[in-house]
Length: 167
Image (cartoon, one colour):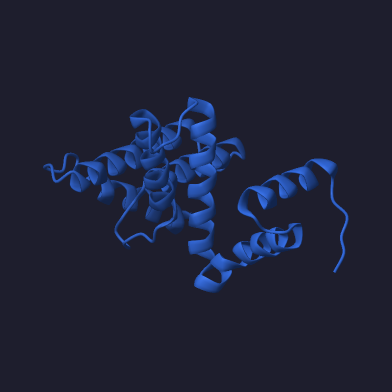
């Protein structure tokens, strides 16, 4: 199989091949095999996406901070935060759980409804407050603290069920 490549990529492949003692063809073959390894290890698209995200996040943070995450404590902490953020954003939710993303989506939806004239500013304010209070209650619950505003989820449900009854 023959293929054309840029001069820069050819130089890189040649340098890697020379440094490892492999021929150019062996180096190209090794790199192509590596590109399929993750596919062979898992059929889960979500897992492949996570691995790709971790690699991209690590490389980006190392470039931005000028140090490897294994050598720089701040870069390592930022990478850990990015991974936690990604997993939290993509993990399944319990039926009773409201997260920050869902709350923001609900608030944006309410603003859209206001802009279309479906609800007024007062209703938007009440619903946004209920969403914010429910989110704060879940944050307290996650931290194991006493839940403040325990009626906020009920308030949120009431506001939305009222909307559904009106439609």
